[in-house]
Image (cartoon, rainbow, N blue to C red; front, side):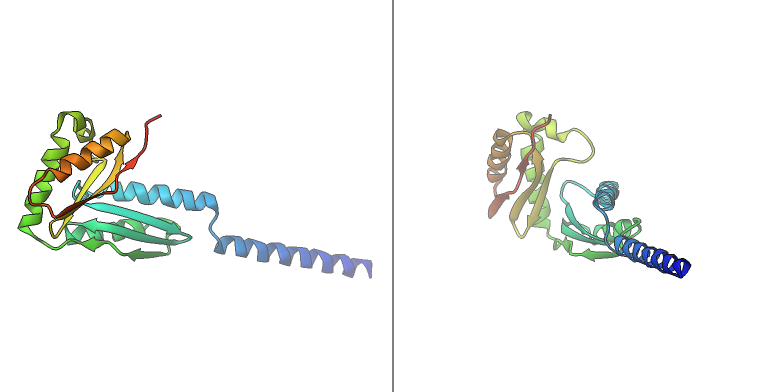
Length: 181
C-alpha cells in the first residue's frame, strides 16, 4: 500500500512539473524577449538599402514582431520582413511599414534637408558612420525628423535647419535626446 502511495505522489509531481514546463515554453522569458529584440535590431540595421531617408521601428511582444515606420523603396519593406521572420523565436511578423509615395518634389526636399542638417558644421558629427542617427522622412512636402541626438541644443538646431529649407509645408521634430555616457 505504501508503494502505491509513493508511486502516485511521484506521478503527480512529475505531471505537475511537466505541465509547468509546457506553460513556460508558451510564455517567452524576459531573456528571450531581449535576445529577439537585439537580433531584430541587428538584422534591420544590416539591411543593405536602409538609409537616412528610411525609418524602421519595431515592437516585440512574445513571438510577434511588429514592424513600423516609413521607407522610400517598396523592396525595403519586404526585405525587413524577410530578415526578421527567420529569427529564432519569432512566430509572426506584422509588417506595418508604410511605403512613401514616389515624388520628385519629395526627393528634392530630402536632399535639401540632408544638406541643411548634415552639411552644417555644428552637426557634422552626426554625418560620421554608416547609419546616420537622424532620419529624414518626407511625405507630400511634410518632413518628420526621427532618431537621436546628443543634446537638446542639437535637437533644436536640427529643427531650425530643417525649418529653413524652402518648399516644406511643415517639420515635425521627433528627435530624442540621448546623452553619451
